[in-house]
Each structure stands twice: as structure tokens, then as C-alpha cells.
Image (tube, rainbow, N blue to C red):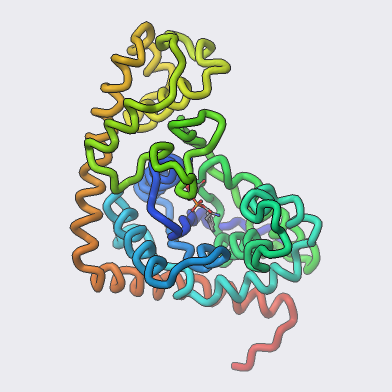
Length: 340
Ligand code: TYM
């Protein structure tokens, strides 16, 4: 087998199911922008086919997809530098996912914790799409032979499965076709936690709106949510060890560090000894300063959804031009006839 050196390429995606949270911003979007500006080719996708693995009202889905695109652009993703598109407009994602349905093993998918969490107790009633979701995710990445995927910590298991699928495909067919993708789970905010419970991830699906900061929240709402965020009675330590077993305190420090582009150590060196009554207003001011321009720009972009649709269409054409030859090559490896 010839050893292939895969060209560096970044891919990542976000589901248009509900609005963007601070967790999505710090764990993913902000990192997408950094990678866009690092000179590597970048593709970022609104994964609408993933969103429909659970019920979506069609009008809400259309709105959420456009709002997510607005969030991408408002956060600093430039459609001239990155390929921005929605997944369903590039049919190769779904086509390669079928091949991967035939590569991945039932046992692998049975171990996926996200399926167990999302399906809950009533597994018999979960959609088949929810079960095979990780295969579509592997396809999103490998249809571009992406080598790096920036994500939050909760996607780690899915990325390991993507690597397993690539390795099994290469091994089954005796080729070095797909790269073994590297997850990029880095920075102070790979797992932003709920503001109400430091043991739970900040999530758009949490029933309590007070548990999260939404990218569309206004300054007053952000300040109120941070003021009410759960903490413990102690002040901030000056060393990182002082945050051990203090999930809520640690979460607020991590958020501050990620928003300020500082390390946790730097934040503690500056703020160690302060009480939360002093630190929380600092955090609110910082969050408002960083997030308000983004929400303002999102609202402005949403006034012209035809422009958003144009950007997504343009991105889909560019994505398709990369994906289609890789799909053809894959079908050929598998033995599927392609008439010229
Ligand atoms: P999704 O839509 O749930 O989340 C999008 C991204 O945001 C990150 N994230 C967080 N990071 C830190 N703290 C949090 N509280 C937090 N909540 C969410 C997620 O880790 C993710 O990076 N399966 C994916 C979407 C997807 C995808 C892909 C990602 C589909 N295909 C291919 C990468 C590559 C998901 O449901 O993300």
C-alpha cells in the first residue's frame, strides 16, 4: 500500500437545532475563526441533516439554519476565506454515509454515549437516523479528507469512531484513501458547563434558560444570568489547584479565560483573592463586550436572509467541487460502476 500524505484541511459542523450558546461559541466557533486565519483550508457546515434525527418543525429549522449561518459570519468566519454551507445542499455527505453504514459495526454504534443520552429510556422509539448519526458525521469529515476537526470535548467519542471507520475502510480495501483525522479539542473552554449545575454541560436543549448564555441574549440578560450563576462561598484562588472539586467556580474562570484569550493561570494570577461578588461583574462586562457585537451583527444579517441563502449556495458549490471527486474515487474503490 502506498503511503499518502494528506493535504491539511479543516472541517467542522454545528447543528441548527435551537440557537447558539456560549458553549458552542467558545468550544467551537471561536476556534473555527482561529483556524480559518491560520492559513489552512477550512470548511464549516450547518449540519441540517443531523438536526432532523430528532423532530424539527420545518419553519423553525429554516430559521435556525439561517441564524446559525449569521452566527458563523458575525463571529468572524469570512465566506471568502472559509467554505460555509448547509449539509443537505451537498448530497455526497448522505451518499458516503451509506457506504459507512456498511463499514461501521452495530457494536461500535451501540457504545455511543450521545445516542444513549439522546434516546433516553425509550430507545425503541428513537429514529434510525439518531442511531446511525455518527456514520453521517464521519462522512461529513471524510468526504473532504479533512485532517483536523475543531470540536468541544463532547464530540470526542464521535471523532474516535470517525478514525475507526477510516482505518477499517482503508484496511478492508487495502488502500490509504481516508486520512486518520486529528481531533482539535483545545483551549480553556472545551467543556463549558451549565451556569446552574457545574456537573452538567451548557446545552441548548437544557430546559432552564438560566443555565446557558445564548448568543442572542442582550446585555441585561447576560449580566443577570452571570449574577445568578451558582458558585461556592469561597473566593478565587491564586493557583489552579485551588479550583479542584469546585466545578462551578472553575467553569466561570474557564469562561473568563476563553473570552479574554488568557490562560487559566493568568486569570488566577490577576484575580486570585477576589470574591465572586467582584469577579462576576468583571465576567459580565467581558462577556457583554465580546458577545454584544456578535449578536448585533447576527440581527443585522438576519434582515436579509436572501443574502444568507446566496452565501450558503455559493459555499455548497465550492464544497461539492471537493466532495464529488472523493465520492467517485470511493465508489470506485468499493467496486460500484460509474458510467462515464
Ligand atoms: P453540536 O451542534 O451539539 O455542537 C457544536 C459544537 O459546539 C461544541 N459544544 C461545546 N463546546 C464546549 N462546551 C459546551 N458546553 C459545548 N456545547 C457544544 C460541540 O462540541 C461542537 O463542537 N455532532 C456535532 C455536529 C457535527 C460535527 C460533524 C462536528 C456533525 N458533523 C463533523 C464536527 C465534524 C454536534 O452535535 O455538535
